[in-house]
Image (cartoon, rainbow, N blue to C red):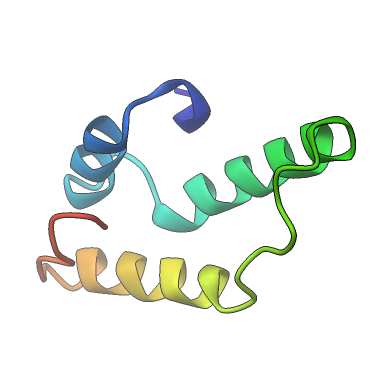
Length: 71
């Protein structure tokens, strides 16, 4: 399942349900940015804390906690 082809709601549901890891979603989108941004020039920067935030979401899911509706 390619997270880049899913809606935000589908991604959030998959992450909260443990069917997808937030850090994998982050990596997929960073790869897409790296691939297309040289042509599109749509991103000035990527949040340097985003990967750690994704890992924190994954830790919450693994611990059985609800990471929130937008995780």
